[in-house]
Image (cartoon, rainbow, N blue to C red; front, side, top):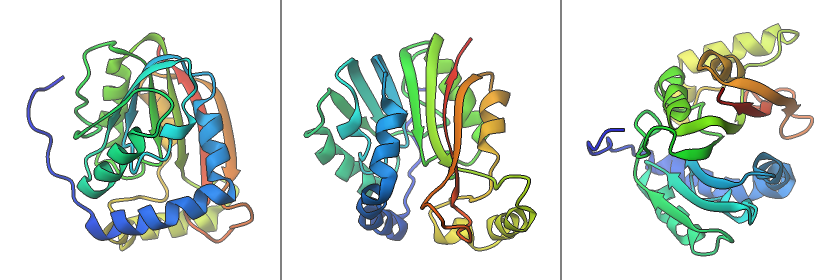
Length: 218
């Protein structure tokens, strides 16, 4: 853990667009995925890239505390408001995934929801999550990911978009990262994985291939 001030991360236009779009996504199945993502969690949790706090309402009562880390000022402000309505104690702080304000093995679980697409280096971010999760603790994640091998055209489209306009338009997002492989490469053991398309039936959307998983730090 570093005491240095986290770098400023500003995506003002995309942050406002996401905050407007997110309730619609939740109404069409996103909220159900969030509930499944967080079901059964207990103890102290760090949520990395908390956005506008959409997950907060879904934490079960078995969670003792949530430290929500969000670097984007507009989304962080909205997350602070959401924390006041949460059913469990939530503290929202400025910070980045690559340098979490948590001690070694300091939490029982880490949560990553739709943020590993936009970090500068997935390997560094996931190594940091592994550092802060206690041995035997969990990583919960839901992300849009690289298309399956059986969809080579979609994979090519994702690579093209990631190399050109997509990160510029979407707050640093990359639509075709192999996030599941990155989770295991960081030293987590994958316990459960569900691959799905979101929104359902959106076969031409480069962000539609998704994965929801649970992994353990050995």
